[in-house]
Image 1 (cartoon, rainbow, N blue to C red):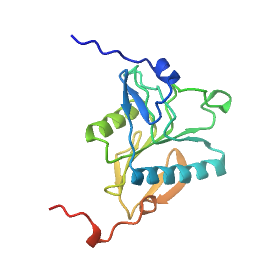
Image 2 (image 1 turned 90 degrees about the vertical axis):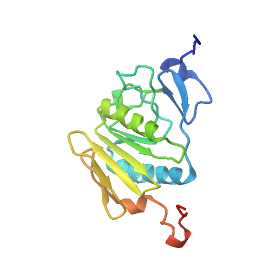
Image 3 (image 1 turned 60 degrees about the vertical axis):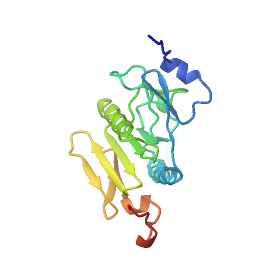
Image 4 (image 1 turned 30 degrees about the horizontal axis):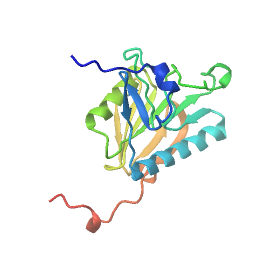
Length: 193
């Protein structure tokens, strides 16, 4: 039998050179991002960040914020592409120096070309089990946003729809089409042949 060493969340937190990596059941897993998905992630984080800052609602974090809020998987540290924690949830309204055991109020995951459907579903399931109130799974390839809100039916939004922050960010609204670069004209679309 081959012994495969595992890393604890505490060891992972102290490691250098783990940008764009998560800890999944004690093993490092790279979280790659293509340029288009990076563009979408940055745009959404800026829109949510501006909305939150103008209203003093809490804190928005980038893709390096680590969450250890998964009792079902103690050697798991997820780094969503963007996240939001509302005011009053951190002690003294200050984020910890390292990772947090607190589940965020909003998780944004932008699907990259390197992501497998298993990895996307696994991330989604982990955040659902952690009782994250609002999850946006954004797919630049299909120009869709899948919205998961606790106690509500799943919704799939397309270019013509409006993404809202209810119930976590009441009043936040943006057209789904505004999250993505302009679509390619039909003659420039890659052929499926």
